[in-house]
Image 1 (tube, rainbow, N blue to C red):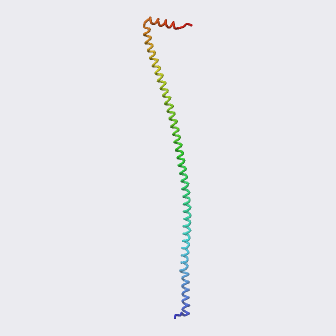
Image 2: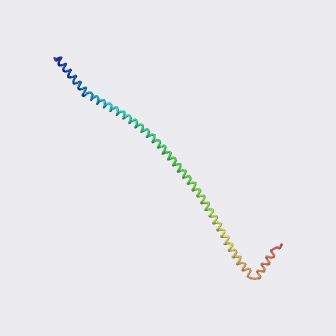
Image 3: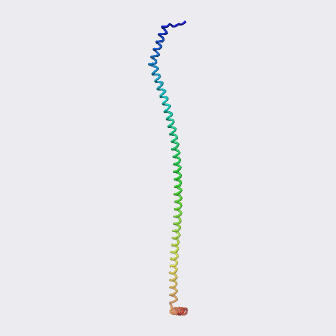
Length: 162
């Protein structure tokens, strides 16, 4: 059987307590301190990660909001551009119709002017030809004195005295 003597138990206990005291002073406190620091680091890291995650969520929400606003702004700009384009096109069509009508009216006026000028020129030529023909006829008629007298007598008979 094994039996331990009282002295051995006391010296073993003293040695154990001394080792326990030395370990407590030299090893346990630094290990506990190191574990506490690590626990604090992990806690802070978790809090930082949660904070970063919250910030990321906020940024994502802000980005979505900005993206929605940008889409609305884009739609507004496109709508305004379409309206402006249609307005410009409408004005251009109206201006072209007005210009076409103005050109047609001017062309009609020019045609009328040219027609009137042509008619006047034609009348002038007809009058000139008529005068030339009448002159030639009268020269032939009045070549003889007898024809002149006859013409005067006819005119006197047809003329009525008042």
